[in-house]
Amino acid sequence: MTLTRLLLTLLVALLIGGTSLIADDAGQAPAGGGQGGQGGQNRGGPRGAITAIDTTAKTVTVKVGDKDAVVYTTDDSTKITIDRKPATLADLKVGDPAFVRPDPNTPTLAARISVRHGGPGGAPPAGGAPPAGSTPPAGQ
Image (cartoon, rainbow, N blue to C red; front, side, top):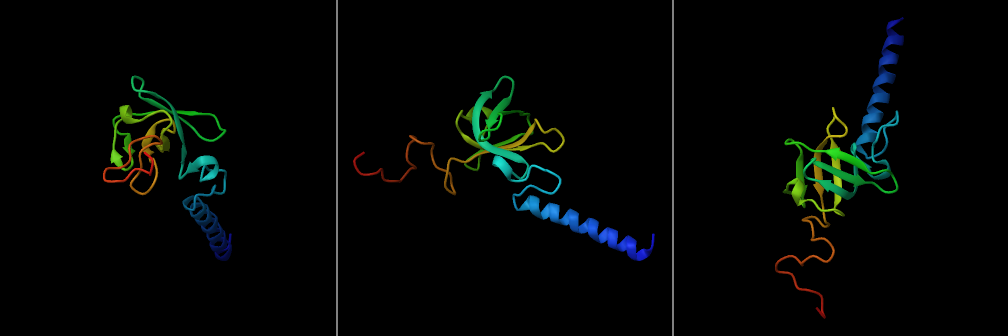
């Protein structure tokens, strides 16, 4: 193989690999069928609604759109936040909108579970109390 052909092969490989990484960071499926941002997926994990929580088995089930629900196990290293504040598995509620980042070595183990109820600082779930210092809508 000539030096020119070797360099050309390396350049093509770098371009393909770089394009795949850029597509993944943009929330799109990378070349090769990765999970990217398709169908409720975001940077390798689903964004959906919590449908079940088992604090004894340390599992959380998340349903993403019309796809099958996925059961994730948690352990002491799983980082759980609600509206960007540290939380525990017991703090999660069925129906919470959640993002799960799986462990890179064990896809069924949740490395991170983040629940955001809305807005930049998070808002209470529907029907919850308004934030402290806010004025309720007229007629209430």
